[in-house]
Every structure is written in structure tokens, then in C-alpha cells.
Length: 323
Figure (cartoon, rainbow, N blue to C red):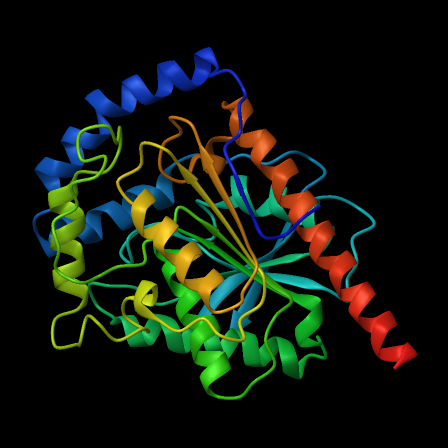
């Protein structure tokens, strides 16, 4: 499979997707617009996510993990995984909500797709903590994996939404510090631009995210920071030297254009990017794989991407051996 390509899946829109996006448009989106206006609402959203029922199949195992200032969990999506390799997963939630637990519908399927364990990191979040704390936790976890004997080429970093932002910031920080980079990264609906600009594209089409609340969060998390710093707004970064990227987004998402911009900037820096824009899919739709057939198909695409990355690495190793 060619790594550097744009994909617009042409699967017919399922009735499940039609129903769910309509429900989101009339419930989740107006609720977010109404309630996300105060720090107390951010704290309440975090606790709400922790009481939601999350079920995983019997073949999935979840074990706690401890990493310096934060915790996390090891997720294994089946048997016969390659324990020499790992995915470091950084969950989304706007830097104020969700956790490794809420994102198990993604992490166990990603483990199965990548054929390796997933370390889902419970990094520090707002409103108590800052963006720098979240990035520090991600870098600490990466260092810890290196100390445990994982080679950089045997690691993948992945994340969704704010976790996609943290994924890109982690890659840029690792590169700038001269550390070994993972073999690939996967970003699902990444939030990449925290500058204070009005989002007009898909403002009304997005069934989930209200543009005003995303802008409010960006202002809150960048208070006292330079929003044009690439570690704050990765879309403005220089991607030279980064590993292959896979970016998955929906065509009607509020954040779609900044995902496109990351793909374009990365390609101009020589980074191969598999950019997938799924018609009419909501924000971070792979987390809905229990109900959306399109989401389950997205994990097959991720598996193909990671297999192509592995094939590229094998070819490079053979070339080096011959040289």
C-alpha cells in the first residue's frame, strides 16, 4: 500500500451513522454549547465520563500501569500479540475530560489492528493542570518505555482529538530533543490549531462540536502561552524528520481543515501521510465502533497503514544490509 495518499472511503452511509449523527446534533451539541462555559462544568464532565458503563469483549485484557506523575493501563486486544512492540495511546477529551477507561473502545481495537499491546496514558489535564504538564507526562511515558527496553522503531504513538494534538506535540518535542522517534503515528480527528481564529468550515454541518466552545477552550488552555508555538499549535510546526503519519477525520467535522493542514505541512517536509476523510462521520468516530460499521472499517484501514509502515521498515533494513 502506498503510504502517501488521500483516501475518501466510498462506503454507503449506514443507517446507524444517520441515526447517531442526528441524535448528536439535537442533544450532545446543544448541551456542549450550553454547559461548557465554566471550570466547574469541565470538572463535572470528567467525573461523568468515569461513571459511564464501558464494556470490552472477554478476549480483551486491561491491567493498570504506573508512570511517574500519572497512571494508565495496558490494553491487549487478543492473544499472540508481539510483546516486543507497543502503542502509546493519548486519549482525547479537550484536555479536561475522558481517560484511558473511556477510550477502551479505541484502544483494544487498535491493539488488535497493530498486533501489539497498547499503553493508554492517564496524563494530567485541565483545569488544574496545564498543556505543559500533559506533554511532560507523554514524554515521561515515552522515556519509560525506552528504559523498559522498547526500541523507538518498535513504538507507535497515537491519539484522538486533544490526544491527537498531544501526539503531534510529543513527536515535535522528541525530534527537537534528538531522541529516537517512533515508527509511525496515528491521529484521529486531531485538534491542532489553538490560535484564536473563528472556525467557519463545517460550523453548522458538524453534528457534535460547537465552534464557539472549541474557541473558548483554546483561549483557556493557551492563557499565558504563545498560541503560535508549534508545541501549542502543532499545525504551525515544521514536520521535517517525523515518521509516517495517518490522519483520520470526518468530512463534516469542525476540525477537518486543521487535520488537512497538518497533512499538507507534513508532506511539504517530506513526511509520508495517509490522510483519510470519511464522508459525514462525526468527531472521533472510531470510538463508536460498537455501533458504527464505518468505525469498524476504519480500524481495518489502520491495520493496512501499519502493515505498510512495517513493510517500509523491512525494505529499508534490507537496503542497509546490502549497502
